[in-house]
Amino acid sequence: MSSSATSPPDARHCAAGVAALVCLLVLGACLLGILTRPIGHLAALWPANAVLLGALVRFPRLARPAGWCGALCAYLLADLLAGSSLQQTLLLSAGNLSGVIVGFLLLRRLHAGHRSLRTPASVPYLVLAIVAAASASGCFGAITDPLLYGGKPMGGWVFWFMTELVNYMLFLPVMLTLPACRAVRTERRRRPLWTAEQARKLLPLLGLLVSAALCLLIGGPGVVAFPVPALLWCALSYRLFSTALLTFLASGWVLVSIALNGLSLAPLDVNSRPVLLSLRLGVSLIALAPLTVASVMSARNELLQRMRYLASHDQLSSLLNRWAFREQASEQLSLLAQQQRPLALLMLDIDHFKRINDNHGHAAGDQVLKAFANLAGSGLRKDELLARIGGEEFALLLPGCDLEQAREIAERIRQRFGDTQVQLDTQTISCTLSIGAVVAWPPFGDLDGLLLAADRMLYQAKALGRNRCEITFLGGASEPGAEPPGGPL
Ligand SMILES: Nc1nc2c(ncn2[C@@H]2O[C@H](COP(=O)(O)OP(=O)(O)OP(=O)(O)O)[C@@H](O)[C@H]2O)c(=O)[nH]1
Image (cartoon, rainbow, N blue to C red; front, side):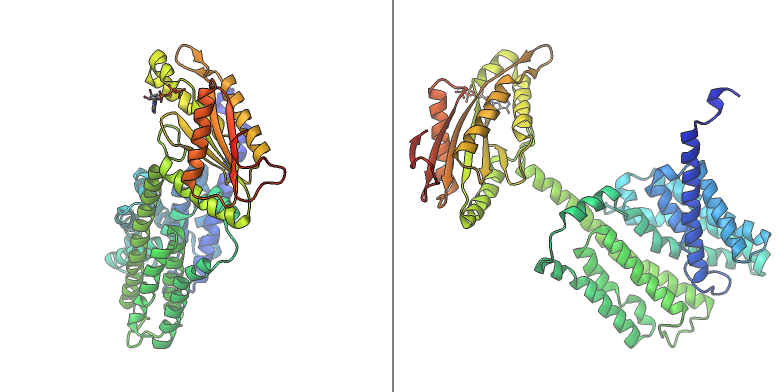
């Protein structure tokens, strides 16, 4: 056999890993379904198909032949373990897989935004894919029901279709909105300590628990809609995945409670198949309301975030713009004044920038601006603010920085920029930088006063020949060992 005909050992291990992972996932979901007390001949909840479909769509690396084989093995094993005959096992497994295949082929064609339910049109697309997947399983139900249980083809189709529809609608949104591991880790690091805001965020969840209590207390057919207001509140308050999960938990709880007679739905007879199917369908269709709201909220929040970024950042350098710098610097000023800490404000201006534009073209000038932004922005602390506040003029706010530190930082930036060769199309160029800086201790006065003082120092640096740094000191209380307020240092 030629070497190209054999898979490398790593690829074989990887395929075996994928098969084992999918097999375990589907087997676990099948066993869970089998545990939800069979009603008639099918379980109250059958998560396996939706979990498999969600996993294959959400993690496309699982959707390879090894993954599909793993899934098939799991279906066969689960049915055999549940005591089904070989004929039953083969038919049920084919019915399960057919829906997953159809759903996968359709969902894979959707735009990633629709697929992860982050656009207003996501839910209708999802419903169409689910209807198609459930219809495919229904076709197997039309064959299986008469063969195995003596039913009619139409009855089999309806039962399988409805059951699959409900299961996909409940489980699939959770799988499709599952956050990536990296996002979860980042969130965990950023999470602040317990705050009043976080306590307020628990209110929609509390509302959901109250609605569950009302379901138990009041009962009757209306219970299927009791959790809806609280779920809509969750959709307006929480992230998409949290809403999908809570919707799934609330709807799943109602369905399982109905199946186990834990919720009184009198005068409805929940042992009647049509009533049960209608209830299941009702619960899952109602679940679409919070999902739709959550999808729209997710699209809206993403748009707001993008607009906020565009409104506060300079497009060329990706640094803060003048407006955002003023806002954030003013906040920093108040904070530093409370903490009685100093600050340094630097105005940085590229020398003879007009000449760069004139000699090398506007695009070359843009390259120089970007190179400067990268250089000055690298290694900034979280509370330090760098902004492009004019054509070739930048501002840098350094909280907690005294005179010596400010001088050292300014000199370092000036020298590093002077040493930088900016790569243009056919040549490299170098430029110099002038810096005017002010170091201040509280009370600072307003930001404009500081900007004016730094601007004066910049003007002085330009007047004294450019490529230099001029610093002054401002402030009420004097810094230990610092020069008195006033002129340039
Ligand atoms: N390439 C480019 N040029 C810009 C941009 N914004 C402003 N400019 C140019 O920057 C130049 C600034 O020139 P001046 O204010 O005369 O300053 P200068 O030539 O650096 O002279 P000194 O500051 O006195 O050293 C002008 O020619 C503007 O057209 C930009 O986004 N890209």
